[in-house]
Length: 436
Image (cartoon, rainbow, N blue to C red; front, side, top):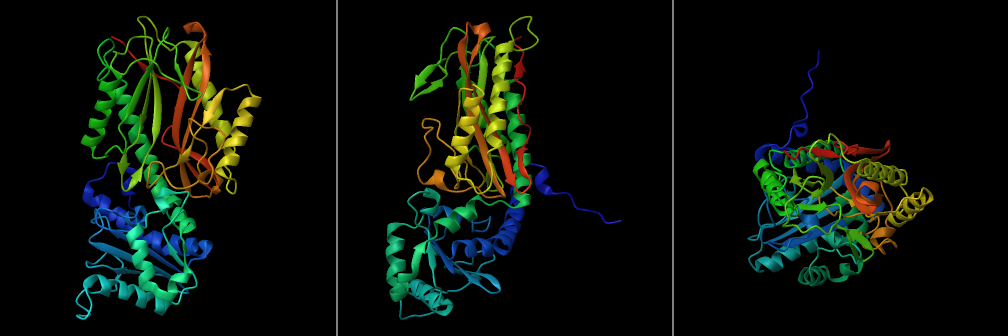
């Protein structure tokens, strides 16, 4: 009988040392299995990723070993595509994980350390003789635009005539950032479940006391809880409240909750939160909705339950349009048309998530602009990617005098060759919060 070792990422959060082992293993696998194909698709033979300490290229952070919390001095990585795969070399003062050390600052006493470092980059380029040299400059994706003005000047000067072969590595950088290993998707499934558990704890009598707890109190409790668990939030949690008799505000065409954040939550309120955590170099982005039961109630009003059901239907209509090869703008238009055909008043503003919370890849609408996103929205969807399926619907609630409720939902979903699947548990019922 063969014993199969359990996947350590199924149990989260992991201790930091265990996380480092997992992340370094993933990096090796990504360099071996993903990067060659991504470089071929982008038509780039040599990829130069450059960053200085405290001013790192966002891509550089995803290529460093887990024990490196930032670049050291100037760190230059040269990734060369050849028939044998990708040769990953580091032109750096210090060893960089599994990258081949390609330079020593004491190697040539005639040159300053900086000139010697760039001279080594020139030597690597001449030896590789690439047709296209990718650098991280991009007008549409900030995460693919990490080469600073100074570094761009220095690399151009160092390469001399080879600088004519410099091209934007946008396609490669975005592909590298958005593509997930199966193991990473499995870890994100666990992290999404953890986020749900923290919210369920926050939306319970152990934390939420009706008439006392405010939205601000709950947001800070969630942030502290995530920090105590070792899964730092990547944005301050948002908790808001909708209440009968307090109509929502309209801002840039969107309805937003009007109950003040410093007002105690009361029985009969709809409580909503938006939470994102970080672990294993990955991010989650989730939203949940709960109802504070009035005395004698055992379930939420039918109008609120219907609003959630309509939100779930909006999710179904959107995931049906998440098809590889379509652009984010095409998905947005198709999902909104399908919703309109069913009489659903809603907006879609979904986005890639993974290494970054608002990740590189196809943008599918903005909460304050449903006309499409120029540039980022024109990028096509690819398999082996993860999205925050983020959207909302607006539904009148009879029990609230037909006051409209904004039911906002957000779930992690993985897009693979097998289709779309939810990460963690999809919310299909309101969390019920006793008010006693």
